[in-house]
Each structure stands twice: as structure tokens, then as C-alpha cells.
Image (tube, rainbow, N blue to C red; front, side):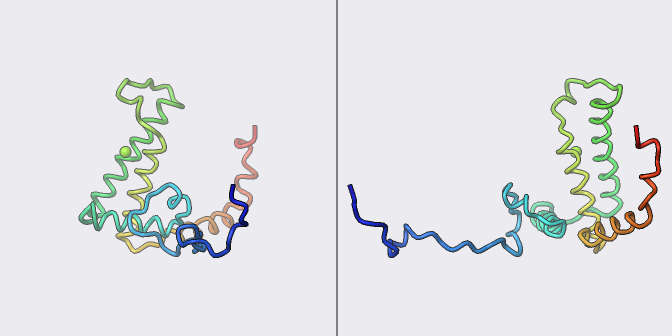
Length: 147
Ligand SMILES: [Mg+2]
């Protein structure tokens, strides 16, 4: 048994590097779950832009992306219609996941924002601020929401 106390001057393999803190910007296409959990909307836009520039070659035109957005929203509708509506699942529908289809919608929204020069981080903050003022009492007064 080693009775020596741990030395503060251990070999380089025993030393723990200092915590660098959260990175300012993730490396391109870093989609590890621990990295994604910390993404801001702005970082998500950067990740999609990097993905488009590398694996996607280039953005589809805005009109093509609009059609893609409608297609992906339709896939969300298909799942919700079967889980919350009266429509039944076909065997081919059963593996579809709402989370994946919502991510598809978000991906295309981000593409449209990127190619339109829109910072979604700022846009969402401004939008929520607008809703907070415009609809400050609207939903509170809506009897249909209570009950
Ligand atoms: Mg889809």
C-alpha cells in the first residue's frame, strides 16, 4: 500500500486541465448532445449555415424552401392528425416521430432566415415582446381558455 500523500506535482497524465468554460462558438457541425443543449438560436443558425455550405452544397431558393416548409408542416400535421385527431395510423406512419418532423420544420425556417439575413435570436425576442404588449390581457380575458 502506498502511504505517500498525493503529490501536487504529479505527472502530466495525472493533471486535470483547467475548465476553459463554455465556448463562444461551437466548431462546425458539432451536433454532440452536450453541445446542442447549449446552442442559442444564433448558434443553431450558424450550425445550419455550416451544414448547408458543406454537406448541402448551397441553399435551395427561397421558393423551394417555402415548398419544403409546407411539406414538413404537412408531415407534422399527419402525425398530430393520427395522435390527437380521428385519423388512424398506417403501418408506414408508425415510425414517424413528432420531434423529428418539428426539427425538420425548424431546419427549413432557419434556412429561410439565413438566406434572408434574419437573426432569429433577435427576431424571436422582439416578437415575444410585441406579443407581451399587444396581447397583455387578451388571453387572460378569453373564457374559452378557462375551463
Ligand atoms: Mg420530415
